[in-house]
Every structure is written in C-alpha cells, then in structure tokens.
Image 1 (cartoon, rainbow, N blue to C red):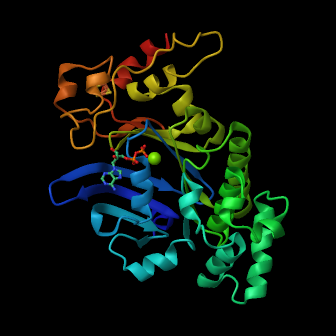
Image 2 (image 1 turned 90 degrees about the horizontal axis):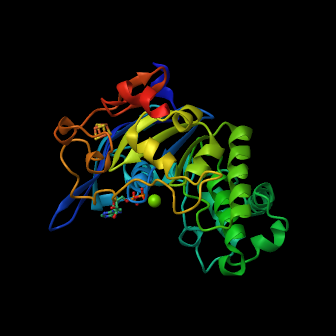
Length: 332
Ligand SMILES: Nc1ncnc2c1ncn2[C@@H]1O[C@H](COP(=O)(O)OP(=O)(O)O)[C@@H](O)[C@H]1O
Ligand code: SF4
Ligand SMILES: [Mg+2]
C-alpha cells in the first residue's frame, strides 16, 4: 500500500452539487488534499468560498440534498457511498467535527455530562455509566474547564460561549478521533478565549497525533496555526503548501490579495489594499479562472481557460499560469 492510501484523510477531486427541484449548483469543484497523522491542514478563504461545504461533505452530512463526487478516504477506507449506520459509527468516533456555532452542536435539553456519557457509550469507549461519567469529567478538565463537576451537571444555556465551545471540543475529542475537523471554531468567541481554544486544539493534537482540518477565513488564525494551507476560492483550491511559505511568499494572486488586505503596523485603516469586487455567487462562476474578474494580473486567456492546480515550487502548488513569471516582480 502506498503511504498516501493510509493517510488518516485523503480527499481526491471532491465535488459537491446541491440539487433542488429547480436547479443544481456546484459549490465544491474538485478539491484534493492529503492529511497525514499529526498534521494540520488549514482551509483559508473568504466567506462563501465553499470551506464549510467541503468540511461537511467530508463528514457526509448532507444526505440526499447534495450529490458528492470524487473520493474521501480515511485510512484507505472510502466514505462516499457508505451506509447511514456505517457513517454514524464513524462520526464522533474516528472523525469528529467542531462546528462554528456550539449552540447547534449541543442538545439544549440535556446536561453536558449526560451528552458526553452518551457519546462515550455509543462508541464503546466507556461501557458503564460510572466510568463514562468519570471520563466525562476528565475530558471537561482536559479542555480547561475549571469546575468539571458543575459543568457536567449544567445545561448548555447555563454556560458562557467559551465554556460551551470547550464542552463541544470535549465531546469531539472524547473518542480520540484520528481526524478532527474544526470549522471556524472560535469565530463566535472573544479574542482571549479564541487564542485559548486554538492552543487547546494544538495541545490535543500533539498529545494524540490527531490530524486536524481547520477551516478559517482569518489569515491571523491561519498564521498562528501553521501546518499546511489550502487557499480556497469559488469552490476550488487555488494554492496549497506549507503555511509559513504560502503566507510568507504567496504564489497565487488571490492569496497575495488576501494578505495585502491585512492591516499592517504603520498603515492606517482605510488605506488597506483589499481585493476589488466580491467573489462570484455560486451558480454563476465565470468561465475560465474564477478569480479573473478581480485579478490585477488577468490576461485575456484567463477568461477562457480554468487553470489547474500545478506544482510551482517543491511541496507547493498554485492554480495560475502567470505566477512563475510574476513572483519576483510582486516581491519588488
Ligand atoms: N445546503 C446548501 N444548499 C445550497 N447551497 C448551499 C448550502 N450550504 C451552502 N451553500 C452555498 O455554498 C456556498 C459556500 O458556502 P460555505 O461552504 O458555507 O462557505 P464558507 O467558505 O464561508 O464556509 C455559499 O454560496 C452557500 O450559500
Ligand atoms: S489565472 Fe489569470 S486571472 Fe486567474 S489568478 Fe492567474 S493571472 Fe489571475
Ligand atoms: Mg463557513
């Protein structure tokens, strides 16, 4: 078996099409990446670029409302086409999702402890109630909850947003998943709590070798987190590589634009160079390179040919035929 076929997560040419009675829209349009043990992959892109749909498609959360294509394998096992019961035993066990909004991830009518106990029981991690209850409190302590007993006996609405998100993380990591998908896990939280939660995810990852797929629209978060980055635009990866290299020396004009829009010390707000225009809406992606209408380097051919993601440097790829000739100029 090749090493890539036993990667905790391998996504190959993933496509997601939402199908309704009146129309079908392609949202994810051929995303490929490999996540190895202990590795972090960040999906970075503006709102609406298809990051959450990619994450939720990997988890197979759309049922009949979406048509998925390509392949998603975990340790070489194909997930696309799996039965509902197979998927249910995988989700929360081998692969877990920390969603953006902790509210929807918790049952408002049940105490946190009972929700943790159930997950531990269902996945066979702890088979007796008392053992599961002890483990639940350990997990709550592990995610930095100072009074795990009280929190275990609380209902979600009795906790702060930060504490609720910690409880969601405790549930997500309770069965020691090999793959943890975190979809903007800190967006709803204030900056201090945000940093703590991100640190917590790194800690958990280092402790148990979990592979983490992290979704964010925030370049700052991407920079802090490290690992690899896939930059997403209009349902495709337009650039991929080690985070430090991609953020330090972006190859794709879209990545360069995202970084140029960041506030830099000494530059007044209002003088930020942001990318002109807005991303195209789903169902109306332009022909050729989807970034062409906003790209300062666009050539006539960009409006006709959709460039594939190709190697542009060792361990790095980008989907723009112009980058090789402009990398030097842009840096100047
Ligand atoms: N269930 C759905 N049905 C139809 N369209 C959807 C659905 N979920 C998301 N979309 C559309 O897919 C696009 C990408 O959404 P999303 O992945 O949530 O973006 P983001 O990168 O901000 O996470 C958006 O235009 C959104 O409206
Ligand atoms: S292919 Fe053309 S339009 Fe697309 S990013 Fe490259 S230069 Fe810009
Ligand atoms: Mg999202």
